[in-house]
Image (cartoon, rainbow, N blue to C red):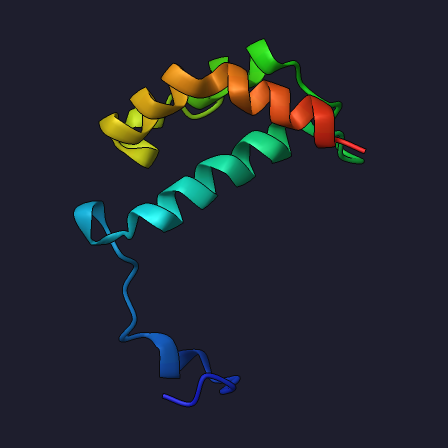
Length: 95
């Protein structure tokens, strides 16, 4: 497939990775990106506190999907073990 193709039919054979097929690096980056997006103000939402962000990552209040479902049990446990470091990094680099 030519990845510059503008025809959606060229991409129908693609399927997203699932479960253990997703590289750990991609899950780590995805979690960090979601944390940053929740903490940062956007034109459509205010910045959330660290506590509110953790709550949403553990279980999204709109969809009910848990962090374990999105990122896996081990990665969510690693995040919970290190969430204070995430807050420290965010607070020192938010500008």
